[in-house]
Each structure stands twice: as structure tokens, then as C-alpha cells.
Length: 162
Image (cartoon, rainbow, N blue to C red; front, side):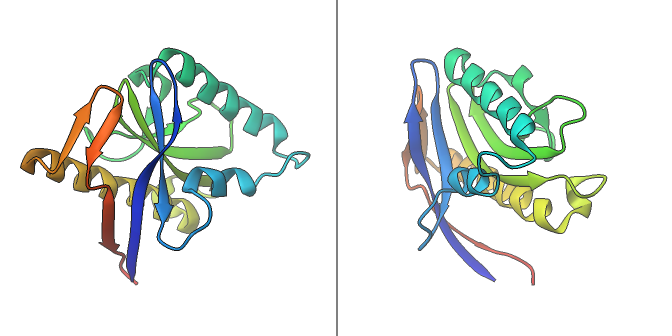
């Protein structure tokens, strides 16, 4: 299945810029789609509050490595918020530097690992692919990380196994 998407800037802070994946023809970014799943007043309010407080902390201090638990392969920058034990909700993201964070999507952990979860695996694989695409474009010079900005072609196409 062919998926076309882009990475777009969603929030700028003094120490970090937040980006999110946005699927072609989608109204919402993946981060917005994540929060839409957990409306205020749902039984997950406390866990969503924990995630929001982590996001606020990252906005204030930067996307420091210690704020994320690695989820992809070593060195690809894919991580999860929160790193708190016992939280069942996962929000996946791609940390490109202390100053650049790309949000993906997430949901309720419904398996031992993301690899075993039909829902979560798709979100993590999307970020792993995005990390690979961005790294490749950095190597060939078509994307440059300048302070808190990703400059260059941020449109991607991936083919997901059926």
C-alpha cells in the first residue's frame, strides 16, 4: 500500500521545534489524530495528562535524549513518551536532535511490545521509515538540519506491506 505524507512544523519554542507527520489528504496531523482518540473526560485522562506534562517539559527544556525511551533500532531516533512505567498509552516520536522532535501517532498498548501490536506497529514503522528517509536526504544534501529547523524536501512516499 502506497502512503504519501509530509513532515510539517506544528509548534516553535525557544529550545525546540515540534513537527508532526501529516498524511496526504488528511485533515489532522498524526499528533492531532492521537489526541482525538482520547477526548477530555475519557477514562485515560490521567495518562494523557502525563503525556501532556512530558510534552510541556520537552517544550521548555528541549528534546533531550533522557526524555524518551528508545523504541526502534539503535540510532534511528524513534522513541516513546512517556517513559513512565505503568502507563498504557504510548505516543511515538522521532528525535532528530535536542532541538527537533517529530511526532507520530500512538495509542493504547495492547500487546507485550509494539511489534506484536497491529495498531502500534504501524505507527512505529512509519517513524522508522521517516528516520531512514530523512537520514538519506541529509547524506545527499537535500535536507539540512539548521538549528531548530528541518530545511528541504519533507514529502515522503512509503510502501507498506499488505
